[in-house]
Image (cartoon, rainbow, N blue to C red; front, top):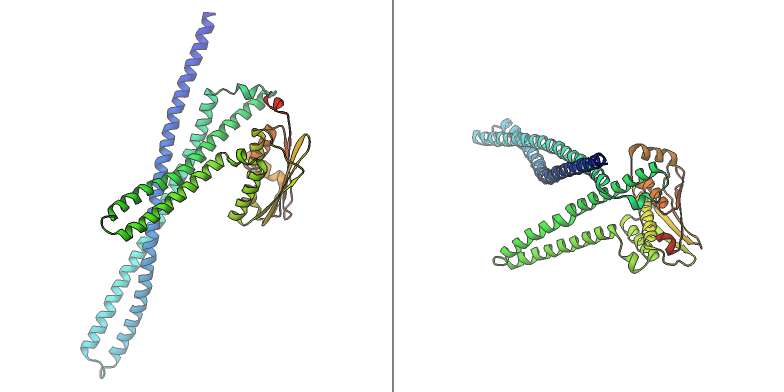
Length: 390
């Protein structure tokens, strides 16, 4: 018995040390990703500056080419007519043509150097983006491994009979959590975080301008208000993506209608929401699951379908909710698409919707043909509150 306890303690110690090492590795990878993001931002700004300078140089080259052609033409005219033009006129025309030619050669050289620099910056930007993507994938994979080692999946595992399916489901949930954290971190970094940095900068500018130029200070304050307003919109969007508050305040159907309305405004794809029968509020976990499936279905329509209209039909019976999302887009080969998703390990899109439906003991079917649009049918069984808690 003591030997058994020693073995268990030893295994526990090894696991703790492993988790600690993985956690340190994750932090280092995250730091690499953050530094690569900063480098991307710096290169992107430098690239934009080079593009603007290149445009100016091209304009100058075009202008000099025109002037140089005119000067050569004048030199030709002056040098032919000795009676009309003096030696001084010829000398002046020659010097002017020569100076313009030198300026043109110099500007063309500058244009070539700028083009070379732009290509180098574009290569550096691509490499930096690759580093960010690889680092983010590593952070996700390491995070999944760490959570899987340290997490407690017992509450989920007891509800699944097949042990292999339990393990796979646990990994997918952890990976989805880690990828969602990455997405939120990326959204905050690219949106509110950068905007807040601009707010600090603009505030410092306003502070200095107040004593020097009130009109400019007012303009900067207006810009500052716009930045804060946009930051607030970005934060609200991030919060909405995490969990739409209108689900709790208004309910599922108004939330879907509002989302469809905003989706149409954003994409130009007309979406109609049709409700059959009377809908009664369901458990929060069911409503958020249904909303996420519809959200992903519309996202797929926007990304892939090339549709100009879609319909969401919702029908509730005594024992199930049926949702149909249909578009008039280009359609696709369902079997081929599912096979590609399986091979690539894709966790969202079609497989994500199917898994959400299955987690609610529901089912999701897809009917699609090339050139004839796509129809998604979701059936979610309804339970009494006691059944769901059990």
